[in-house]
Length: 219
Image (cartoon, rainbow, N blue to C red; front, top):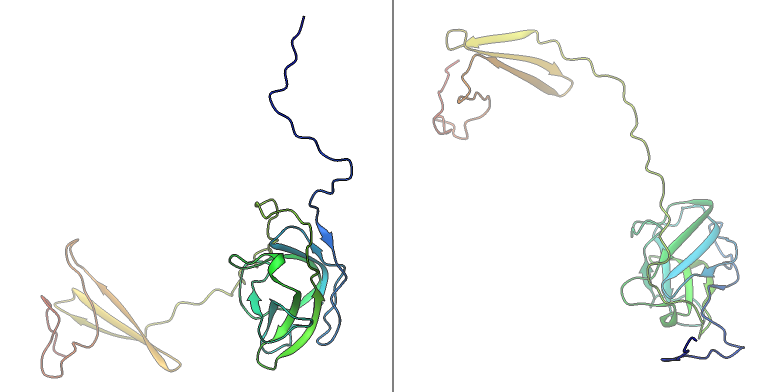
Protein backbone atom coordinates (compact mmCIF):
# COMPACT_ATOMS: atom_id res chain seq x y z
CA UNK A 1 0.00 0.00 0.00
CA UNK A 2 1.28 3.45 -0.94
CA UNK A 3 0.74 6.47 1.27
CA UNK A 4 0.15 9.72 -0.64
CA UNK A 5 0.95 12.93 1.23
CA UNK A 6 0.81 16.50 -0.16
CA UNK A 7 3.63 18.50 1.43
CA UNK A 8 2.57 21.68 -0.37
CA UNK A 9 0.93 22.68 -3.60
CA UNK A 10 0.03 25.63 -5.79
CA UNK A 11 -3.08 25.66 -7.95
CA UNK A 12 -3.07 27.58 -11.23
CA UNK A 13 -6.38 29.00 -12.44
CA UNK A 14 -7.43 27.76 -15.89
CA UNK A 15 -7.39 31.26 -17.40
CA UNK A 16 -3.88 32.27 -16.26
CA UNK A 17 -1.76 34.07 -18.86
CA UNK A 18 1.97 33.55 -18.25
CA UNK A 19 4.40 36.25 -19.37
CA UNK A 20 5.15 35.86 -23.06
CA UNK A 21 7.07 37.83 -25.71
CA UNK A 22 4.80 40.56 -27.05
CA UNK A 23 4.60 41.58 -30.71
CA UNK A 24 4.17 45.27 -31.56
CA UNK A 25 3.65 47.09 -34.87
CA UNK A 26 6.52 47.92 -37.19
CA UNK A 27 8.53 51.16 -37.04
CA UNK A 28 6.67 54.23 -38.24
CA UNK A 29 8.45 55.55 -41.32
CA UNK A 30 9.61 59.16 -41.37
CA UNK A 31 13.13 59.60 -42.77
CA UNK A 32 16.30 57.92 -44.08
CA UNK A 33 14.48 54.83 -45.27
CA UNK A 34 13.68 53.56 -41.76
CA UNK A 35 11.31 50.60 -41.76
CA UNK A 36 11.06 47.17 -40.15
CA UNK A 37 8.90 44.16 -39.54
CA UNK A 38 6.74 43.86 -36.43
CA UNK A 39 8.88 44.60 -33.36
CA UNK A 40 8.85 41.99 -30.57
CA UNK A 41 9.53 42.59 -26.87
CA UNK A 42 11.31 39.37 -25.92
CA UNK A 43 11.70 40.12 -22.22
CA UNK A 44 11.90 43.12 -19.89
CA UNK A 45 15.18 44.32 -21.42
CA UNK A 46 15.44 42.82 -24.91
CA UNK A 47 13.82 44.13 -28.10
CA UNK A 48 13.83 42.18 -31.36
CA UNK A 49 13.69 44.21 -34.58
CA UNK A 50 13.26 42.10 -37.73
CA UNK A 51 13.92 43.23 -41.30
CA UNK A 52 15.40 46.56 -40.20
CA UNK A 53 16.20 49.09 -42.90
CA UNK A 54 18.07 52.38 -42.43
CA UNK A 55 20.37 54.16 -44.88
CA UNK A 56 23.01 55.08 -42.26
CA UNK A 57 23.16 58.71 -43.43
CA UNK A 58 21.98 60.35 -40.21
CA UNK A 59 24.79 62.56 -38.83
CA UNK A 60 24.13 61.77 -35.16
CA UNK A 61 21.68 58.84 -35.10
CA UNK A 62 21.24 56.25 -32.36
CA UNK A 63 18.65 53.86 -31.00
CA UNK A 64 16.74 56.03 -28.52
CA UNK A 65 14.16 55.30 -25.80
CA UNK A 66 12.17 57.51 -23.47
CA UNK A 67 8.75 58.60 -22.31
CA UNK A 68 6.07 60.59 -24.08
CA UNK A 69 3.55 60.19 -26.84
CA UNK A 70 6.35 60.60 -29.41
CA UNK A 71 10.18 60.60 -29.38
CA UNK A 72 11.76 63.69 -27.86
CA UNK A 73 15.19 64.98 -26.70
CA UNK A 74 14.62 63.74 -23.14
CA UNK A 75 15.36 60.13 -24.06
CA UNK A 76 18.56 58.10 -23.70
CA UNK A 77 20.79 56.15 -26.06
CA UNK A 78 20.54 52.38 -26.43
CA UNK A 79 23.53 50.37 -27.63
CA UNK A 80 23.29 48.67 -31.00
CA UNK A 81 23.09 44.91 -31.59
CA UNK A 82 26.75 44.38 -30.66
CA UNK A 83 26.62 46.53 -27.52
CA UNK A 84 28.29 49.57 -29.10
CA UNK A 85 27.28 53.22 -28.81
CA UNK A 86 28.85 54.12 -32.14
CA UNK A 87 26.78 56.06 -34.67
CA UNK A 88 24.27 53.74 -36.28
CA UNK A 89 25.47 52.05 -39.42
CA UNK A 90 23.20 51.25 -42.34
CA UNK A 91 20.86 48.24 -42.12
CA UNK A 92 19.53 46.35 -45.11
CA UNK A 93 16.80 44.00 -43.96
CA UNK A 94 18.70 42.62 -40.96
CA UNK A 95 17.18 40.96 -37.88
CA UNK A 96 18.72 42.34 -34.69
CA UNK A 97 18.23 42.42 -30.93
CA UNK A 98 19.03 45.37 -28.67
CA UNK A 99 19.02 45.55 -24.89
CA UNK A 100 18.02 48.41 -22.63
CA UNK A 101 20.90 49.92 -20.62
CA UNK A 102 21.52 49.74 -16.89
CA UNK A 103 18.45 49.16 -14.72
CA UNK A 104 16.01 50.26 -17.42
CA UNK A 105 13.25 47.81 -18.33
CA UNK A 106 10.51 47.90 -20.90
CA UNK A 107 8.19 49.18 -18.14
CA UNK A 108 10.24 52.40 -17.87
CA UNK A 109 9.85 53.52 -21.49
CA UNK A 110 7.04 54.45 -23.89
CA UNK A 111 8.81 54.46 -27.26
CA UNK A 112 11.79 53.15 -29.20
CA UNK A 113 13.15 55.39 -31.95
CA UNK A 114 15.99 55.89 -34.39
CA UNK A 115 16.77 59.47 -33.37
CA UNK A 116 19.21 62.14 -34.53
CA UNK A 117 20.50 63.93 -31.43
CA UNK A 118 22.09 66.86 -33.26
CA UNK A 119 18.99 67.85 -35.22
CA UNK A 120 16.40 66.44 -32.81
CA UNK A 121 14.80 64.48 -35.61
CA UNK A 122 12.84 61.25 -35.37
CA UNK A 123 13.61 58.97 -38.32
CA UNK A 124 11.11 56.32 -37.20
CA UNK A 125 9.71 54.83 -34.00
CA UNK A 126 7.42 52.31 -32.35
CA UNK A 127 5.24 52.99 -29.29
CA UNK A 128 5.70 50.68 -26.26
CA UNK A 129 2.35 49.99 -24.53
CA UNK A 130 2.06 50.04 -20.76
CA UNK A 131 1.73 46.90 -18.62
CA UNK A 132 3.20 44.45 -21.09
CA UNK A 133 3.30 40.97 -19.57
CA UNK A 134 6.71 39.87 -20.78
CA UNK A 135 9.22 37.47 -19.17
CA UNK A 136 11.85 38.86 -16.82
CA UNK A 137 15.33 39.33 -18.24
CA UNK A 138 17.22 36.29 -16.95
CA UNK A 139 19.74 35.94 -19.73
CA UNK A 140 17.52 33.71 -21.83
CA UNK A 141 18.03 35.97 -24.84
CA UNK A 142 21.36 36.73 -26.41
CA UNK A 143 22.47 39.68 -28.46
CA UNK A 144 22.97 38.98 -32.13
CA UNK A 145 26.43 39.55 -33.44
CA UNK A 146 27.90 40.74 -36.68
CA UNK A 147 30.44 38.37 -38.25
CA UNK A 148 33.92 39.87 -37.90
CA UNK A 149 35.30 41.41 -41.03
CA UNK A 150 38.34 39.63 -42.37
CA UNK A 151 41.43 41.83 -42.46
CA UNK A 152 42.19 43.23 -45.85
CA UNK A 153 45.05 41.41 -47.50
CA UNK A 154 47.67 43.95 -48.46
CA UNK A 155 50.27 43.58 -51.14
CA UNK A 156 53.70 42.61 -49.76
CA UNK A 157 55.97 45.56 -49.17
CA UNK A 158 59.34 45.39 -50.84
CA UNK A 159 62.20 45.96 -48.37
CA UNK A 160 64.04 49.24 -48.98
CA UNK A 161 67.39 49.30 -50.72
CA UNK A 162 69.95 50.98 -48.48
CA UNK A 163 72.21 52.93 -50.82
CA UNK A 164 74.18 54.80 -48.13
CA UNK A 165 76.23 53.30 -45.32
CA UNK A 166 78.79 54.30 -42.68
CA UNK A 167 80.80 52.07 -40.32
CA UNK A 168 81.95 52.98 -36.81
CA UNK A 169 83.99 51.40 -34.00
CA UNK A 170 86.33 49.53 -36.31
CA UNK A 171 83.52 47.94 -38.29
CA UNK A 172 81.51 46.83 -35.23
CA UNK A 173 78.62 49.23 -35.96
CA UNK A 174 77.09 49.88 -39.36
CA UNK A 175 74.47 52.58 -40.03
CA UNK A 176 72.61 52.37 -43.35
CA UNK A 177 69.87 54.66 -44.59
CA UNK A 178 67.48 55.07 -47.49
CA UNK A 179 65.07 57.90 -48.39
CA UNK A 180 61.36 57.04 -48.28
CA UNK A 181 59.14 59.84 -49.67
CA UNK A 182 59.15 62.39 -46.80
CA UNK A 183 61.11 60.30 -44.30
CA UNK A 184 64.33 58.33 -43.97
CA UNK A 185 64.57 54.64 -43.06
CA UNK A 186 67.58 53.84 -40.87
CA UNK A 187 69.00 50.35 -40.38
CA UNK A 188 71.48 49.39 -37.66
CA UNK A 189 73.76 46.37 -37.94
CA UNK A 190 76.51 45.39 -35.56
CA UNK A 191 78.43 42.79 -33.63
CA UNK A 192 77.43 43.00 -29.97
CA UNK A 193 77.26 40.72 -26.94
CA UNK A 194 74.06 39.48 -25.30
CA UNK A 195 74.31 42.14 -22.56
CA UNK A 196 74.96 45.04 -24.96
CA UNK A 197 72.72 47.22 -27.11
CA UNK A 198 73.11 49.72 -29.90
CA UNK A 199 70.95 52.68 -30.85
CA UNK A 200 70.94 55.61 -33.20
CA UNK A 201 69.30 59.00 -32.66
CA UNK A 202 69.45 62.41 -31.04
CA UNK A 203 71.19 62.59 -27.67
CA UNK A 204 68.79 65.09 -26.13
CA UNK A 205 71.48 67.74 -25.67
CA UNK A 206 73.16 69.97 -28.26
CA UNK A 207 76.63 70.10 -26.66
CA UNK A 208 77.07 66.57 -25.29
CA UNK A 209 75.72 63.03 -25.41
CA UNK A 210 73.06 62.46 -22.76
CA UNK A 211 72.37 58.72 -22.86
CA UNK A 212 73.56 56.85 -19.79
CA UNK A 213 76.44 54.39 -20.29
CA UNK A 214 76.60 55.15 -24.02
CA UNK A 215 79.52 55.67 -26.37
CA UNK A 216 79.51 58.84 -28.43
CA UNK A 217 80.55 58.53 -32.06
CA UNK A 218 81.87 61.63 -33.81
CA UNK A 219 81.07 61.86 -37.52
